[in-house]
Image (cartoon, rainbow, N blue to C red; front, top):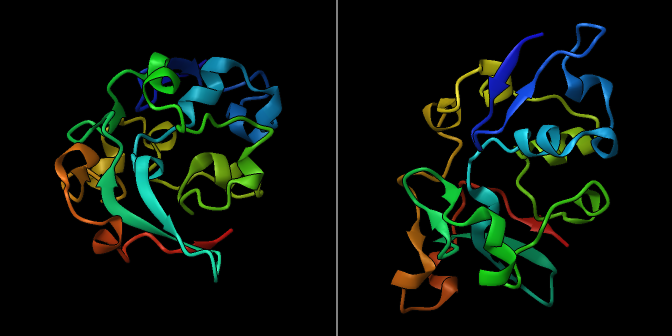
Length: 166
């Protein structure tokens, strides 16, 4: 059975008994905690602040990251305690992923929840935790921390992640 470490460093078995990867044989709800966590590619896109326009319900990403995001590794500085430190941090689950329309189109949780496949650059496919950075998918080198900005979030809207509707 092949094992890999995902970008969040949780070792998990990739292949199941029928020689297919677990994400092709299990629903999100059937996955173990380790399997679920290994789906995160470590891009950091979900950790970006977003602006929602009430009149259109459009949600735009900004280049401003949560203060807990390590801008070099694109990992949470204190993942186990993130909800205590940032109370409005959304904890993804099989029950809420379909409702979170603002998740990036590249997000493995979103892709699998909607019947998609993991892209070639995903660490579980490439077996390289840095592949998300090499492919230019991660926010590394493209964002600033919210603790360093003084202006309005609307001054930081970006177009390299598509806006979405709520």
